[in-house]
Amino acid sequence: VIFDSNAYDKILEGALTKSDIELSRHKGFDYYITHIQADEVVRCQEVDRRQRLTLAMLTLKPIVIPTDSTVAGVSRVGFSRLSDGQDMESIRNGSQRYTNDALIGETAIKNKLILVTEDDRLRTKVKDAKGIAMTIAEFKNEIEKE
Image (cartoon, rainbow, N blue to C red; front, side):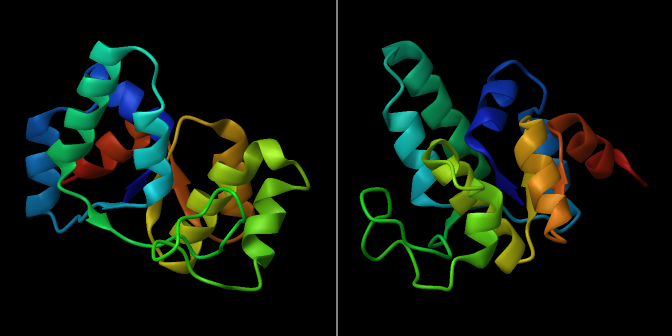
């Protein structure tokens, strides 16, 4: 499972609890993160919110993986891979504005991870590219299945 940055906001609101995370681990779910989500949390201007978002990330104990493409001015050396960028470009759809989402989405697709995001556009793009994407509520329902 890889969370889009906006899913951490939902975790702060209680949409996914520490108990949910523990249950998901017992059911075999592991969590992953790229530098993109960590960078976005660090850029949060509100100190208290930034600290709570950081704790939400740490609660997941995610495994840090590189993004599957490299974008100049965005990607970090050692935390990104070189690729043809086709999935990333199809998600980005020519707009620099969607670069971070595209890097996260492509990484989910290439690593066969479930992307959890509240972003309808990103979720649709990942599904169109044959990836798995769901809202945090859908993910919680998945955890609670017998």
